[in-house]
Length: 461
Figure (spheres, rainbow, N blue to C red):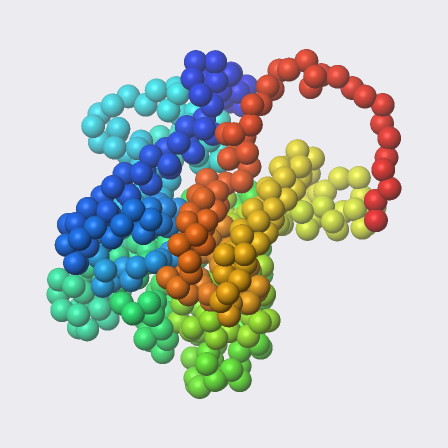
């Protein structure tokens, strides 16, 4: 019943206005434009001169898309006003444009229309229209609770180091940046949090915030409601938790194995610090963007693993990017099903519909195409530099996965390369499938879709 109602609402919306996917894409674009204007103002720069259009666009896009790639050192290039603009853009981009807009309308006492409810449903990647406002309130309270808790914990380290005012600013900024998987920092020198690589309070707090933000709001809600009773979780939450735990453990093992004796990364650390930083690298590769070790000095094996992890990213309805954990998960399940000659994919007593696999495959193929095109474009623009193809692929995947890690030193890239990364970050945040739907002229009720043609099987493999 709810599904039928929501489909009818979407049909009504599509007849009266532009499609929800286009509204979401346009909303992110408008937010980037506003951020660009504010960051280009002299009041945003410590030099009291405009930072220039292309740097303002890049920074605004990276903030809204919670990527973390930077062309200017956030902590030293921007004034308090500029840093607050970046923080607000991160918060809106992390929570989601429609969620934040709904909170504003609720605060102003505005009624949430049917059109807005459909847009909210699309932005949250969910079905049904009932209970959306209640869910948004819960998600917002939960997000602010985690961010506030993280800020309080970080303040025990940052206030003694930087004083009361600057310590509070650093605590709040980095807690929000971590939970939103943004990767922006205020420590200066393009160092990220490398100076805290031996500090468990900072490293583990930011890792925890990153994981929580990357799980997705619906998973966190089910964990809260079911008190960690795994058997009561939905199939979505089960897949997210299993895949996330597997990736975290696998990332830790591979990073420690590849970097154990590397003097530029983990080689000079104690045993416990190696494990802690290996774990953090496993966390941050999945869209966080912070780094406790220099990404440029990683072995090629670690960079390759990083590219894979950045491409996968976080989970649906989360603050992170990538093609998402469940997308990869259902494709792996499909492969196993085909290998075992099963007609359907059944897991935890539930059968996954074929349309889910079609959607997952489409997302992956579009994403691979975007990353490869970006890497090729960067290789042409940086052909006179000493950067290797794996570094450029690392940069491209980081931009698309809204991660923010860089082994190519983003500020040193040519202006063409930096500008080319901007639409890639936008594609990665809006979502390849959503963007494809937004740009395509989909005629769902076209007569051609109702025609059936004779079957013929091409040879595969």
